Amino acid sequence: MSITTEEQRVGMQEASDAVAITLKKMREFAKPGISTKELDDYGGDLLAQMGAHSAPYLTYNFPGYTCISVNEEVAHGIPSLDKILKEGDLINIDVSAELNGYWADNGGSFILGEDLHGLGKLVEASKEILRKAISNIKGGVKISEIGRLIETEAKKAGYTVIKNLTGHGVGRSLHEEPHEIANYCDRYNTTRFKKNSVVAVETFISTRSTIADTQADGWTLHGNKGGFVAQHEHTIMVTGGQPVIFTAQNGIWD
Image (cartoon, rainbow, N blue to C red; front, side):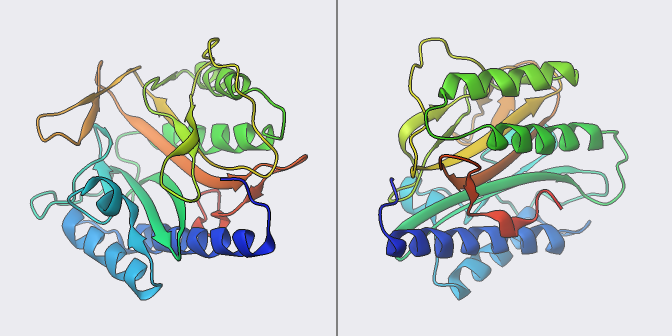
């Protein structure tokens, strides 16, 4: 969507606050011994308390309020009573929701407790690459150039990017134009970021894989070459200078 009124800006901020606060509190609630279903139910309750509705459930009838992916799962992990969190797990939580007709999206990866498997560097790379990418977005900048920046920074850090998962426009629905804000330079994409538009920008930084493949459950994604992936995501408004980060309250850069 393109923000043209103060009412729209306030609406986007309120929806973004709901998903950001939920993500932050879910991250704090996560601990060894609980199931991803318990963590997801907690997130669903938080959204409901703020009057928000799960976007994956509304849009795709996803079997959970949020997507919770653990270790080798890249994205779209289904919350389950059988999936018990453990010390050192790489966890990704993606929270998107609708509130009063506005939609916002955010996500973040983190290590649960002690970094037993040495994946903290991957998580930090994903965070910092997102920070750099967002700081370079303004009206008129080619989307493909931000993709080039993300992939270049990933390679510098010794990682690859997942090429078939992308950021996207957001605002009046979960996915809007531009439909693909890729993590690499798609030379066929000549689209530019538009001032006042709302987009969800996300990194998918990988230790090995370049493509995310759907598993037998129809939802969960794994990397085509194995390994691990860290993702971080903010909903922002593009301006003529530094973007407005609507989901700043999620604290993924803290």
